[in-house]
Length: 374
Image (cartoon, rainbow, N blue to C red; front, side):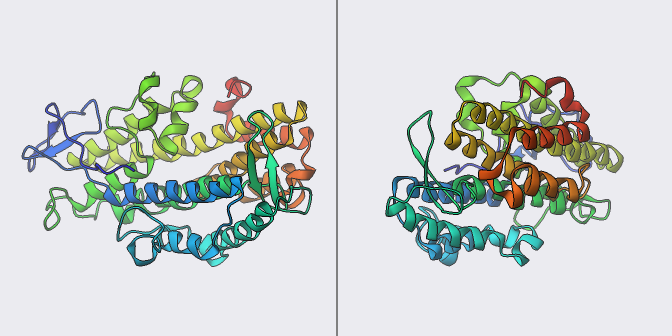
């Protein structure tokens, strides 16, 4: 569990009142010698998703899941996920989830299905078309719990919340004019804090990306355990597309522009973030489509469905950007036709997967040169 949220360094650029700063090398900013960067709420929510994933994964070994426990973790009942979190917090995931998904009870439905499927798993029921249960991953020999369509529950929840909460909050809340536009308070610090409202809102967007302050391309293998969720996937495809430097530079330059009260420069960096983070989701989807194709060709259904569950969630994550290049109809076509009719993985074919890949590559031409290397 990540507990530190203030980023400090003896080499940080100091942003004293009404001063202009140069762009620092890392995501490190101070005022009067103290850090102005804080995003404890984002760290808490990432921790919550990790705990939910770990809990759901116990069903892979035959444990029965509690639907109530999953809903309590989602809403953070009593500040400790109904007793299921090893920490307390006044934050939650549910209130930060994309509103249409809440209206459609997307995650509550997944929790209910997971609890029901876990009873099958506990009884030793093996998954098949139309029957939820345990499915063996051939490479490891370990089981995963899947729904009646073959979709893996741990991936639907973890990767689903990466989109519905983390991306939703970045795209639809913290990078908007309502939070970092020209009318947002940026002169006076908030009461009891060392940051302005505008600085803090931008930091909260960065908190959902959740990279180390010195994150960059050519990241050391020895430090990959410091990466979580979107920063981890940024690093996974950095060799092909240079995401680490591009995204971090935009965050650092954007935060510098806020300190310097330069709205035009900030807007330029925000546009880079919208484009790069959307491309990151698309690239990761293509990666997992490639993986699914390889496993299908080898006749490894369990491995294929594991990878396809991730591809499904990353394609779905594209819908959360209000500036997305891909249309809702294209997303629906990929998820509900190319990945099997109505997302039924048991019906997926190499042709459908290649069609999905072609749609993504045509929509995001930056992927074309590296589409087979992702």
